Length: 123
Image 1 (cartoon, rainbow, N blue to C red):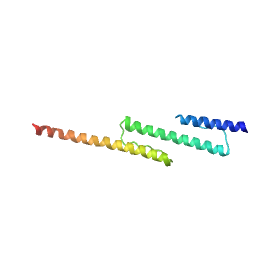
Image 2 (image 1 turned 45 degrees about the horizontal axis):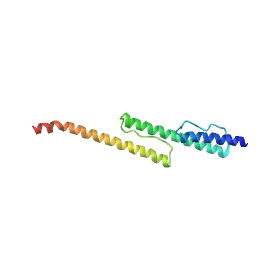
Image 3 (image 1 turned 90 degrees about the vertical axis):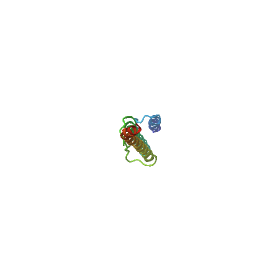
Image 4 (image 1 turned 120 degrees about the horizontal axis):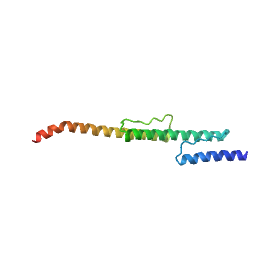
C-alpha cells in the first residue's frame, strides 16, 4: 500500500514539475482512486486548460501580430476567474491593435487622396 501511494505521488509530482517547466503535454496516467483520483483529474484538467489557453494566445498573436489578419480573438470555452480575465485581456489587446491599424490605414488613404490637391494648390 505504501509503495503504491509513493508511486502515485511520484507520478503526480513528475507531471506537475513538467507543467511548471512549460511542458503542457504531460498527463497523469496512473490508475488511482478516491482523493488521489480527484487530484489526478484536477491536475490533468488544469494542464488541459493551460494548453488550450496557450494555443489560443499563440494563434491570436500569430494571426494579428505576424500574419496581419485583423480581428483575431482567443476562444477559450469553460474558463473562469483568472483564465477568463487573461482571455479577455488578450482579446482587448487584439481589438486595440486591430483598431489602431485600421485607423492608420484610414488616415493613410485620406492623406493619399488629398495629397494631389495639396500639391496642386502649392504651385
